[in-house]
Length: 144
Length: 394
Image (cartoon, rainbow over the protein chains, first blue to last red):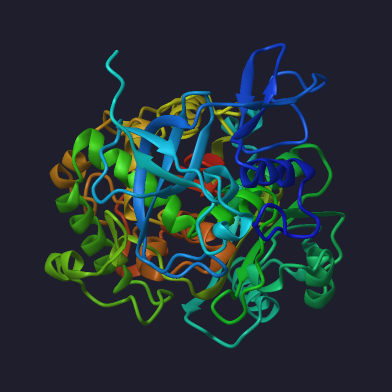
């Protein structure tokens, strides 16, 4: 277990670190400080400069919905019964994330934010049990 | 690969066993039958096969020595042996690799063998982001990926339901004339029945998706010189091949519909000296109906957003101007796991050799075969590949 998420024993260290940060209440992504670029999913090297260092940078939870669909068949080990909506979100920090979208009929291009769970929401880690780790909800568009 | 355009390589035989749901047979058994079919059609003897290329079956996943087991079981002794794992692009990518090996002098006659029995035994298991990031977040497999892409298409252009229905119905019609199509699928379909099929990954419906089955297919690739020496008069020349994997390596594109086909389609056509309108038939990789429409646009058969109108305006039947997936494709013949990419390849060779029987395309001077492989994290697909085959007298 890592941050409430079951991972294969031989999982990448970087993936474990991502989930551990999330369970501790922080959305942190790998970032190449030289290029000022974040990347996701977590990888064993920087996609910008293979020899460059990577730091785990806390990033805003907000982003834009790029795509969404309904999962209608059960996924082994996943806590939600189907149907549930999932989507791709372009985080304001740059990378795309896949997760559950808690909205009935979301609009592509709309603003969403990652929902804090468990420790992220000031609750004990057990509160994350049975909850999808990456959940997005609509947020009001910032008047720009 | 200039040597392809120079027609120095020839596909001289095709082999296939009927697709079947939960056949209870193994990839070895199915593969042996497909090889026998190809040898019988060409008169080539096993001792003449000095190269072997094979896909790694889902039903044998976890066996790290698959190709060795395969040639040992089949009684072959190759000087060049190659496994390939490009998912749905593997079959046409395999022909290109076999051609390169022949061109380089590593071998002369290559059996490309694609066999899988995932509806009897499924052992596939993906690590990395799939197991560690996507699955814990609720990923439901390739249908989730294509449901996401479909939502983008629907948002941008409107969901081309009428065109998808037309395509699904045509492919079923083609499958009724293909004795190797899965029995469950080789039945006529109405557009109404398509529209009534249950949603799978909205906006995708059940009949937008392939059905998994067991099967095997094969081609034999050799040099044109060797084909002539053997007196094999009718051949299909692979004249152009292009592939691209992971086209957006840093995830910078915001266009989820932009794929490698926009690169490899035009390049393969240019290599062959052809325009899209010169293509006589298209055997498009069709794990999902929407994948065919996306390829029509990205390769350049029509403009972006116009594939629905293109499908409705053109006769895609074997009698039409651009026949598509003349044997029913995977959508209507069944997806025999990682051998599924071979269905379009074998059908193209069969058509060019004039052996497609009741679904034969008239004057089959050339065929484009496409392959699409592997679902990445938060993107569209990993490998995009295009092969163009020409008959002996185009």
